[in-house]
Image 1: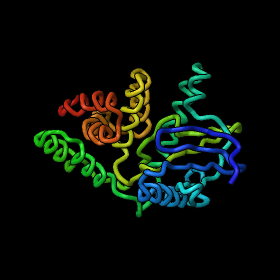
Image 2: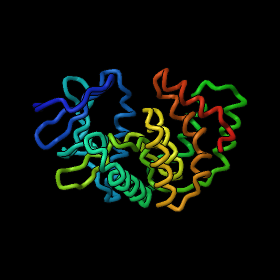
Image 3: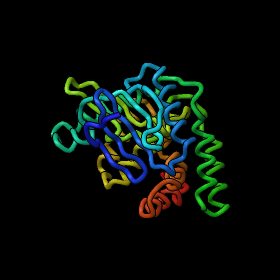
Length: 249
């Protein structure tokens, strides 16, 4: 397989354009189970009819696992927001509508968000009392079956020249409570220092979904704990401040 160019480089993966395909090549020590799970998640979400790049194949290239996706020509929503700050409200509107479209779908074979959150809490290294409080809060949250992206942020959305939006990277997809996914998006904005945008996003999500803002906020300590497991050291410190606000209002 010949590559046209590198689209993005990460510590554990490199993403290439190859003709009409996007090829995500993983590092040799990347978990095989996680790679196959990403492909399976994407295939299951693809069946819902959502606008996403379809999986073409899972293969090996020079001894490294790779997933081959349909290539989508365009710019990320993050790039568009940066290039056209005057259109921020328009882009944010598109962003929230897309998230709500995702949450309107059902994919019964996806992993359950609550199970994943509980597992992540146990991996945080937090003290037993904090873990107990987080698990008790999680157990008290409503159990839904909405498709949740798990990393919904503007850099994971490609907008074509015609204005059609496609959602990338379904490796963290689950089925569960949409407010938890909104809480994660809020934290992702905050992690990048976009506090004003985070608040604007949350207000718009709650208005469009008719969700109480306080309800999404109840998810913040739980989501921050689960996010801290995979975060960089500096991100973990930031996230654990949210975890410690157990009675966040």
